[in-house]
Image (tube, rainbow, N blue to C red; front, side):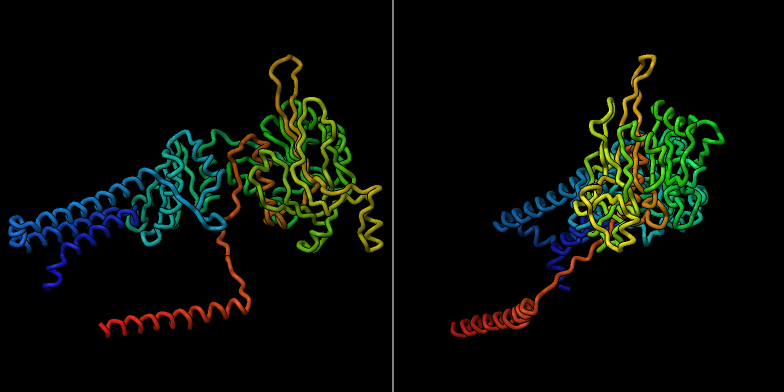
Amino acid sequence: METIKRFLNYISLLVLIIGFAFLKIFAGKTYIGWIVIGIAVLLFVFYLYLHMGELKDSLRRKTLLYKSNILVIILLVLAIIIAINVLSVKVQKRYDFTEGKIYSLSPQTIKVLKNLKGELNIKAFYPSEISFKAEDTLKLYKIYSPKIKYEIIDPNKNPGMARRYNITAENTVVLEYKDKEEKINNLSEEELTNAIIKITRDKKQTICFLQGHGEVNPDDTSKQGLSFVKDNLKKIGYNIEKLNIAEKGKIPDECKMVIVAGPQTPLFDSEIKMLDDYVNKGKNLFLLIDPDTGEKIEKLVKKYGISLDKDVVVDLVSRVVSGDPLIPIVNHYEYHEITKNFKLAAVFPYARSVTALKPAPKNMFITELAKTSNNAWGETNLKEEIKTGKLTYNPAVDKPGPVSLAAISEIKIKQKDNSKEKDAKIVVIGDSDFAKNGIINTSGNENFFMNIVNYLSNEKDLISISPKTARSSGITLTPAQMNLIFYMVIIILPLFVLILGIIVWIKRRSL
């Protein structure tokens, strides 16, 4: 008891430091820290009460000066701790040293947050025992935008609030922006950012998938369908419509863009003209044209500076990864808004090359977006070589690598009435398989597809964020290295400490 009485001042200081630490650790429950700080103050007051007599004596001694100095030092330390705590709240800065940057927001998300125009309220309905999961994510979002206000609510302790927002499951997040409301059940960066984008958009845009010539069906949930990309597009606020222009006789004005994915039979001349007129109105096309198809579309895109080549891309090196030389893997992207900061490889099963014409037609800017390695080539005689069982590059007729598989034509269209020019865009990819359900989740396929759609719809803030996962960073040691570590840690260092201890003991004995 006497020991505690003597060191009660130091104990109170320790408790005080712990209290300030708790203010930081339990940011969502600051009352915990303030309770601990209150206990520290009470302990110190109790210490003063117990040592009142000694303190009075000290006032008459020179030791008061020394004790005063110690008190000043203690107060300075406390002031520094308080200042650091205040600065840490006011100036938010995080450093993420993980290899996959799993505790950082993507540059695209940061851009979305900084472009918020109004206040966004987020209510996370999480049980208290796991509320820290929501707290970590939402706090990170708030760092980049003061317009984000968030609240974490335990639905078990506040059932009235849960009923008000019609919460039927735990871990539900409600976003409120102006008069709109959006709910998500997964607080991942992709889900939350896309929900923010969706709720803050002024109006929905409509994307039309052309049908009627054997195109891939956006409603098809099989491996050969496009239901996955359709669902992703709807998730971030697009309307999706199927369009048969042979039946309608026109492309509706509400179609922000038209996607033509893998037509198996030629389009009618009238349909080609409608697509051409559509571009001349300043609208955008996204064409995914497989080898040996799209004869009339080839003529249309050539008008806009892009060549759909009559070949099939072969990459013998990619066979090591994909198991098939007709599935080229692309990891080289030309600089463009679509591919900026894009570093994921994309896979294109059975694709044709897509080349920018040189020189480019007037008022058009052509970019080849995605290219294979130098080891690939555009094979023009595939059927005959398959019969021989050997694929070989023939420089006389085949296209040498690197081979472009995707290109964009950005067009300035002059108006007949001399009014302001209109901008139109056409993206052409020599493969529709890369976007199908069976392969869209492979590496960067989904991101590449979504980035193209978002660019063509002039929604550059819309993103598809690849999941961030912690990587296992292992280390491989040789037998010699393992032996070195074993002898150093288990034998040499302990023996050194033992010998040093014996020497010190002998020297003290001799004093």
